[in-house]
Length: 116
Figure (cartoon, rainbow, N blue to C red):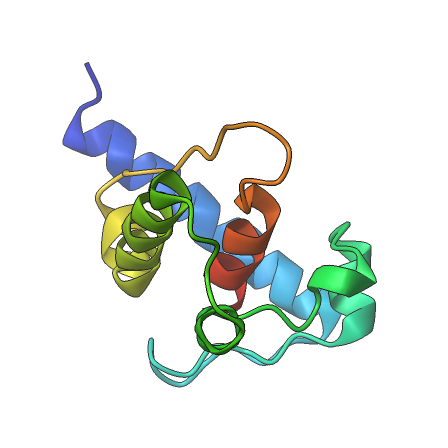
């Protein structure tokens, strides 16, 4: 069982890692939770995100349109809901695991979550 003390320690470690990442990659820390740092193509590539995914955001996905597959649509709504409350979820210790077959938008949704 994870205690509040364990959660607090994990959050302290995550905050430290975020700070180091911001310093190392030259990203500015957002002034509020609503303004995420802009990630450059170089930073996204450094993170292992291929060029085809670098402009992916939730609005871009919605403009392009989701596949007709109901399973993908349901998963998209779940991931978007998670991403909309990302900081609260992280603070509470809730993670997200995306799994599925090839072509089910796992990477696309993961990048959209990363980009806010």
